Structures are given as structure tokens and as C-alpha cells.
Image (cartoon, rainbow, N blue to C red; front, top):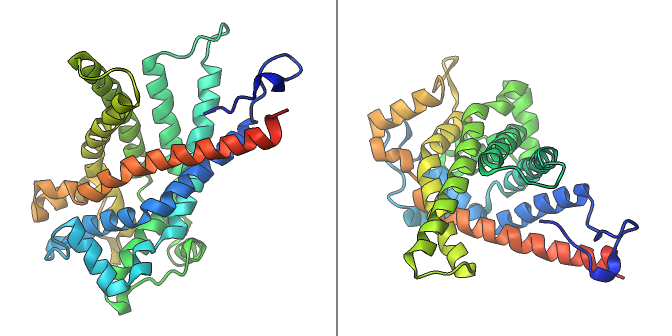
Length: 314
């Protein structure tokens, strides 16, 4: 989202002055981090729900609300913010990389006459940027999954990471550097699915609402289309997400990993826990998606306004 200067703040070539790319990337990452502070409890609940009942054990939590109340009761108010440092680092790495890759590719594929890339090319750019960002953000993702999962384990089995940096150092030292990228394939696959599902479902939802005759092209229509898009995106990406979560949290048993790969996770979940267990944590995942997006854009707009006032005005 570019920051344009006021008419009186033109550059030497007469074009409106805008913030440098580095500032745009920085603001994108900071905006995502700001939003994470508010939605971290939902991420925690989603991860706990996805791990509940693992290995044919009895489910620890009946519903997302039961999970939230149980965590508050057992771990206190601070318990629902476990893993916040990892969530912030994930946004700093994933969001900034994704935004940077998207911007660079978008500009390179824009025609000499200023014609932007077509819909399919935009989708491809979005999926490429998302997958690249997911790869860069995988170490923080591994730390986040493990830190949020720790509280559900008996005291003698907990990993006890103090913060995200302590987690990354210990994982590299105790399990090897490659472990930091454990589950990177399903993590990247989820990013591709999310980007593809969001683009396609938002466009179709918006068109459906406009064609109904009850909506005009305004903020209400955009909000409703976003909520429908979020529903489709959540449904499409959750099976990949649960595979990612379990692979990144798994331990070695007698020198062998609990799961061979993402497909093995999906098959075992369906076999031992039921087909619909692939969508465990649906409610907090969906509830997180909307607010995180909205809050990200709110923070981004406010930082852009402040930057414009301080550096681009006059």
C-alpha cells in the first residue's frame, strides 16, 4: 500500500513522492506483528486443537471454547500468550519476505506502458511470494508450534523454551540445523493454497454479491466478500495446516520420527481420529484470519500516515 505525498510534496521529476521500498517492507512486517499481538491467543487455541487426540489418544479439548477456558484455568492469563515472541518473529520474516518478493515480481512483470500483470499472473506472483516467505519463516513457525504446544504436556516432557531465540538455538544444537526447516514443504504448500484460495474466492464472492442486487461496490460488500473468502480459505488450507503442525511438533521415537511426511499425517489422522478431524481448530483459525487481516491494514495505514506527515509533507 503506497504512501503518496500531498500535491505540494512532489519529487524533482514532478511525480508524487512515496516512501522507499525498504520502508514499505518494514511497515508491512511491523503491521503484521502488531496484529499478531491481538490474535496470538487464537493461534494458540488452534494449535492445541490440532494436536488434541494425537496418536489415537482421548481428545483433550471438546471445543475451541473448552480449550480456551482450560488453558486459562491451568496456565493463567499469560498462558494464552505463550509463543508470542515466535509469532512476532514469524511475521517479521514471513510477511516482510512475502511483501518484498511480491513487489519486486509485480514491478518486473508490469508492462513498459504501465499495464499491470493479468489475474492469473497476479495469482502466480502471489503464490510464489507466499511460498518463498513461508520457507524463510519456517524456523519461526517450528518454534511457535513447539512453544504453544508445550503447556499441554506433563512437566517432565516439556521442552521449556524461554523465548523464540532460545528455541531456535536449542533446536539447532540438540536436533541439528535442518530441523529448523522441518515441515517446510507443507508450510509452503499451505501458503500456496491460502494465496490461491483467497484470490479466487474473494473475486468470485464479490461478483456473486454484486450480481445479487443487494450490494453495491462499497466497504460492506468488500467485508462480506472477505468473510466468505476467509471461510473458503480456511476450509481449503486446514488439512495442510494440521499436517504442518504435527510434523513440526513431532518427536523422535526410538530414533524414528512419528510421521514420515505430510501425507502420512493426513492418513493417520483420518484412520485414528476420523475424517473431519482434518479440520480441528477450524473456529479459531477462521476467527483469527479476519481480524489479523483487518488489524494489519489498520496498523499499515496509520504508519503510512505518520511517515507521510513526518517525511513527505511540505
